[in-house]
Image (tube, rainbow over all chains, first blue to last red):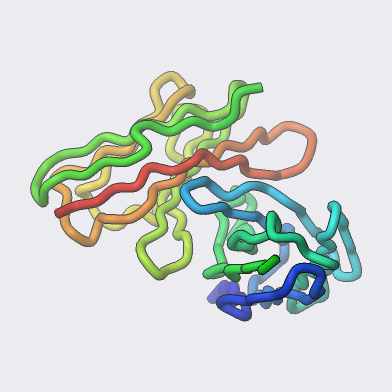
Amino acid sequence: EDQVTQSPEALRLQEGESSSLNCSYTVSGLRGLFWYRQDPGKGPEFLFTLYSAGEEKEKERLKATLTKKESFLHITAPKPEDSATYLCAVPMDSNYQLIWGAGTKLIIKP
Amino acid sequence: EAGVTQFPSHSVIEKGQTVTLRCDPISGHDNLYWYRRVMGKEIKFLLHFVKESKQDESGMPNNRFLAERTGGTYSTLKVQPAELEDSGVYFCASRYSGAGPDTQYFGPGTRLTVL
C-alpha cells in the first residue's frame, strides 16, 4: 500500500540552528515528491517538486533532496518566519491525487 | 493571477443539517481536487474532476457527500445530512494538465464544524 511518513512530528529550534525534516515514502512508480508549507488557517503552499533520486532543489534557506526511499528538507540558519507545518506528498497515480504525510510542525524560537 | 478560492472559510452546523462548500479554481485549470483533513490526521484525497467530469471519487467517505463541477469551472461539495465525523478542514486544489510542472495549488480551506 502506498504510504508517506514524516518525522519528527514536531521540531523546536533556536533561530540559526540548522536541521532536517524527513519524508519516507512507499509508492509503486514515483511520479514526483512534493513539499508544501502550511501556515495556520491557510492552505498548503507549494515549495518543491522532486522527480528522481539525487535531485536537489533550493529556495532561500530550504533545500530538498530525494533518494529512492526518502526525501529530506534541510533548513539552514532558520528564522522565526520559517515556523510552519511542512508537508510532503506523492501522487498515487497518473491523475496526481496526492497521498500525504502527517506533516512536521516546525517552531523557530528567536 | 487569482489563486484558488473557497467559500465559506468556516461553517458551523448541527448534526443532520446540510452544508455546501464551494471552490473556485485558478482560471484555466482543468483539474480540480477535493481533500479533507480531520483533526490529528493527515490530509486525505476525496475526489478529482477533469473539467466537468468526475475522474476519481474513490476517496468520498459515503453517499452523504455529493460533488459537482458546473461547466468545468467552480465546484461544490455538499454534505447531506452532516454527521459529527464530517468535521474537519476541506481543501480544494487545482492543476493545469498542459505542459509544465504537475503542481497542485491549494485554496485556504473551509473549516467545517458539525455539532
